[in-house]
Length: 475
Figure 1 (cartoon, rainbow, N blue to C red):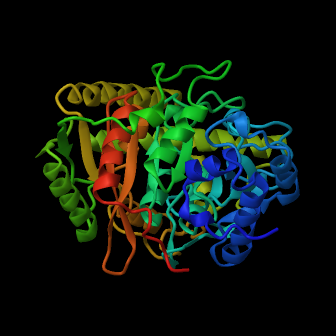
Figure 2 (figure 1 turned 90 degrees about the vertical axis):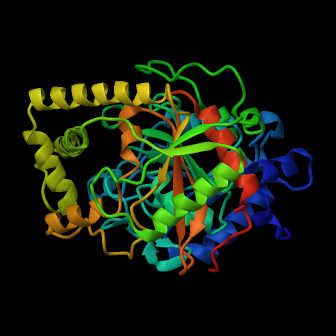
């Protein structure tokens, strides 16, 4: 079989269109993805599990009529269940987990005709903003392999940035789609709370802060994947406002003149890196050239209390995850099972009282109302995605016993994404800036709850005005 050399010139929709028109087969696309995996993955460590033979059988039998994405190779993050495939969640504690069913979102990917062929690297239980777990090893950034891909969907972002595939599954509980999208020069949309399903094994992730979608190279791909997966599954505890239209069509609409608020103050109180500030300033100029009104403004709420409340939800859910697994294995949780950061977070979660948890939830609900009210006056909030460009591997070290240093560094890296996890609003990171050292720097737009359409419209407008598709890392 001749190699399909033009593979990287297309996004997912472009590849699927070739399959639908009979110009290339799903098997040829899969072999192109496998060839690139074998070339790049030994360096990047983006893909941690592969099942090529099963994927080849699916590709041979593919019905191109399944949908707009039929025939496109695809990867699932190693936090989500794929039937019969190990799901380590980046941890020794879960290394032997082999599910007997697919996650609901994985079922939808299959129904859309995507060809699943592997799973991507993630930090232990998705807890870190860098992907370098003790169990799976560090994932390297294709733009500079000494630097982090971000996390927790770092493997997905590295694979897409390297050209192994045009889009990959990702999840986001505090920025884990947008952070690696920023670090790897990709589009990263976190949908509204409940827009895509998390079942059947959980009703919500991290107290409703987590959601699944993709990282991609184009805005239209992000829209098409949302079309393939949105809507509640049976038994979901809640879902986003029902959307009757087509997200892909929304990309083609003019957003009109928008009123955009700008936020340059990290939630963590850290100092903003000049490159991240420059990214936003350049985007402001671009927005104004396109006719939008831009001004500095931000919702009024207690940021200090917010910084105290969100870790309560995370710690309690981490505790439930790891202690339940240890109990299922019939042993006490130990330092041999999980990394120091995970263990310290779990211990904190176990010590959290029900009263403290309820108080944190109530505060976040109050914050959500204040932020929602802000969007009565503004269409979007523009900010950096991160506090600084991609850091070097090892700088965010979850394997170190020095947890205080880890936390000090974490807040210097991460400070704009998790508000929208707590409020449930959609937010998107776009690759609109690079440093002098050619490292990507993302900017983030956030919209009102349920309004992915507006984010896709502004993102498409940015993509047209300042294209990024042909800007690639030199591996």
